[in-house]
Structure formats: C-alpha cells, structure tokens
Amino acid sequence: MTGDQLARLVDRHAACLVLAARQWCATPEDVVQDAFVKLAGLRTLPDNVPAWLYAVVRNGAKDAARSARRRSHHESAAARPSDCFQTSESAGLDADAVAAALEELPADVREIVIAHLWNGLSFADIAATVGGSTATVFRRYRAGLDLLRTKLRVPCPTST
Amino acid sequence: MPDLDVTPPDPLAAALGKLVPTAPALDRDAILFESGRAAGSRGLRFWRGATLVLGLLLVPFAAVSLVPRPMPEPQIVFVERVVENPATLPYEEAPEASLAPAAELIGVSDPESLLRLRRAVLADGVEALPVRTMPTSVIVTAHSPIR
Image (tube, rainbow over the protein chains, first blue to last red):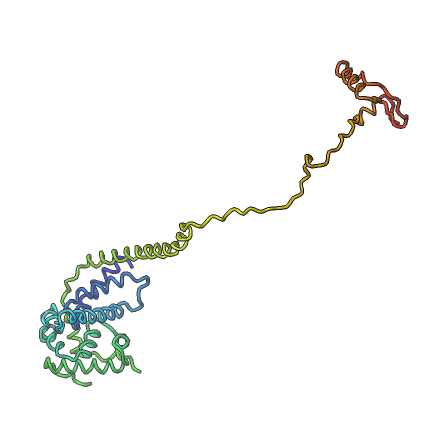
C-alpha cells in the first residue's frame, strides 16, 4: 500500500472509526491509529477495507477499555456525547441531542446503528463482525432507529 | 431474502447520516511515519530471527569442534619377519671369482689377461680387442648386400 492510499483511507474513515471507538474506550484516536498502522503492514489489502478497519477498531477499543479497567479499577469513561459530531444540526436534529440519545441506546443496538449509518457497513458485514444473523442485525438496527425517534421526538415516517 | 441494505430510506436515518463525526485528533503524518517504521522493524525482526536460528543451529557444531578430543595413542605393532643376516649364516668360503661371461667371449681365460686387455683397450680403443672366429651363420658383416 502506498502512502497516498493510506492517507486517503485515513481522511475518509478515521472520523467515523473514532466515533465507533468512542463507544468502548476513552482513547479512540490511539486505537484508530493502531488500526491504520496494522492495515499498512498487511501484505495484501482486505477485500472490504472499511469492514476490516471497523473490526480491528472494535477489538482494539474493547481491549483498551479492559486494560483501562484493570489499571484504574473503574469503568472506562467513554467520550462525552457532545464531542461526537462537529456539525451542530442536521435536518432539524441537534447534534448534542443525537449524541446523548445514542449514549442511551443499548450497547449492542448503538454499535449496529453507528456501524451502519456512519461507518457504512452493510448488515451482512456487521453480522460477520458482531456475530448473529443478518436479519437479527437488521431488526436491532430498526429497533435502534425507533428508540432514537422516540428520544429525539421525531415523527414516524408516513407509511406509503 | 431481500437485500436489507436496499430498504426504503428512513428520513431519520438520512438525517442522522448527514451529521459529520468530529474530526479526530489524528495526525495523518504520524500514522504514515508509524506505518513506515513498523514496516522497517518487521524486516529487521525477520533478520534477527534468522540470525538467532542459525546461531542456535551452529552451537552444537561449535561445541564439538572446541571440545579437545584425545589424540589416539600410537600403537606399536609387532610383525614377525624372517630376515637373513649374513653375519649369522654359517661361514662359507667365498666362491672363486669367476670371469664375466663377456670376458669368455673375447677369449680371455684368466684375470691377469683380462687386466692386460683392459689396459690395452683403454689405451688404443676397441681395436685392441682380439678378433675371434665365429660360425658363419652368426657373423653378419656390414658390407654384405641385403638380398
């Protein structure tokens, strides 16, 4: 992999991977940086680079959280919800409110919502990473959207 | 099974997707530098590992060559051999000195005559040798034509 290819991947995926890593550890940037260094060290690029990066970041973040818990004997603090998004509003949605609502989702649902909406993973890729069937992952995703809709007080889309 | 990724777009999902995650405090150049350094150290690790393995393989050979081996003691082998020692033979009278067969050919019968003839040959050459009559079947002269 050339330096330009690596730089393009960093520009494209780093922010979303940090958002995903924030769910588990307090040092998401370090985890994401390690993931890119590992990617650069591969002899051949994986077929699905975003899915590979997400899986590596996920595992690295969980390992970092475990290490932090062992060191400090406290629950590792994830990033504050207000630090998640740089835009303040999107289509009537307040970024801080969205971040807070995401924080309140169950961990497995939040992971699927972030992986699909911001990391661009398909439901099949998510199922391969977190385990379970694609249908189960989709159901949890829909459940997550419904929960967010409730918390953000967004009206349900009219059924056609 | 329908492709779940191609479902009717949810307005909330679309709005959420437009929120841009905070730019991470990642230094892209630092990532590139770390990647290059990791690649270099990987190559170094390979050669270090190969050196270690070869070194370990050489240890037994070095141990064998450095341990002094006892020199084999020289073995003295006694072989029985019968050697005739002239000094131990019973005394025998020396045989009479006989004239060489060549002296007999030139008609010299005694050693004194042989010495005289020898002196003559040394002084005058081979012409001093006596001419003896030999059977004609044996004599071949140089001047006889070859038929």
